[in-house]
Image (cartoon, rainbow, N blue to C red; front, side):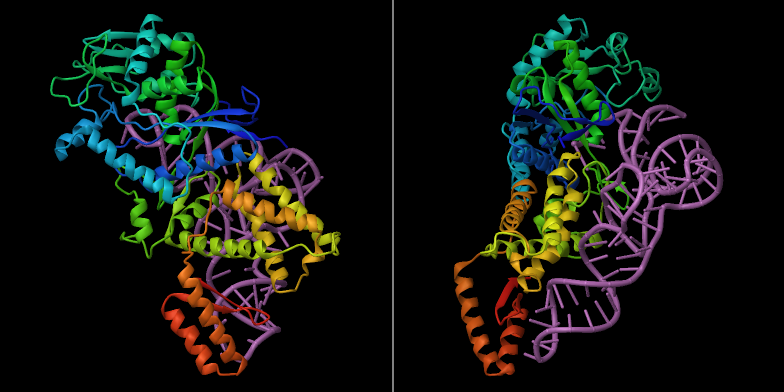
Length: 495
RNA sequence: GGUCCUGUAGCCGAGUGGUUAGGCAAAGCUCUGCAAAAGCUUCUACACCGGUUCGAAUCCGGUCGGGACCUCCA
């Protein structure tokens, strides 16, 4: 079964065919770095990280471009006034680029904690001013934009006469106009839906650049058009972002590309759904956002405890990327335990070595295992259904654990099946899902634990349960869980 | 108002018309010096009302509830 991707443009799953065989160009709208990223932002980047990883797993060479917006993002819907960076910089008496630096570093740190791979290219808006000026100039030359008093607007109504402006989210022009306010006396743009490509800066404005239209700064949507074209070309494979970006930001990107290059920028538009709290979207403006830091430390009034980055990642994997995901303590605790169970089984699986017997002694079990393994790729090919893959993985957990305890012999399945099981678990858990074991792997601690285990084994052999229980109880107080395995072995883990 | 999404067992959540998804929680059993893990078993749900069909959680229509977008947001 080939890879199929849900395309927002067609509102249907489509077979994925890259423009250049073996290569994928993917552009994802990154964060605006004027404040800390919250968990909802992280969800989108985790979703696309897994998409990126899976495309690589399939053998594609992927150029993954994710921008940093560090200029030009306006407050509110008025195409005038400050951008967010200038506003916060003035408030905090900082250089705008200090704000940008601070939150860019913070963003990268969080991405690393969540084990997201860095994109191939991470371009910034301020680093591509001349490209944005050039594309704006070209749109004017093509007749789809006009300049008034140093500000350049995109002429939406003119564009819509030639091609449907609301094509991405299936909206008609009349409906869009209905939801917009009347132009007031202070407005200089011609149409209610027109948006700024370039904005004239006031003299006191902290971030401004020279342009053919005077000193100013770029509009929000133009950066993505300029940067995606520069690094991926006029037409590339996948353009992604959060669902909230579809109606305005991505709609405008399509219009800009069409107006400038006479082509829609991407073949597949992918949108990830929102993270909610008590059923309402987590957002910066509502102030109901959790910061990753608060989650990892448990320092938040709504959190009962701290949750590890991998718990959060696993939590998100259990839901399909196009479904809303509701954030709650119960759900996170369930994920924490589920992840541990799955990862423990994986650790066990890694220890197995195939027996002498190459053929399966239990053909029924062997075919069941093979079927479940085969489902991993099958489910991922169906629009990246990570939740279903995890379902299949969990069905394999009892098989693995039974092998460990000798309830099932390892040669019940063929040597090739066992090898495949080990290979696919590693490929999926580590490479595709990007999960990892967070327990400290400390050599000193390992030595000490081995010593304690030896002492406890001797005590148990002598039926000196006072000593053996003391070791286990004291370790428990120190946060270490010591477990007796079948056959007299012992294992331990940090809680 | 417009464009969409959505309503699934105690909780989370996947579901391509016919086969118990899965996780967490709960209960029982097995293993065990005792624990903890682990294994086995149990809990079989699809908002409501119609329709199509041999058969609907799934398709169609309606009703009610929830949410998103249309204004800065991943």
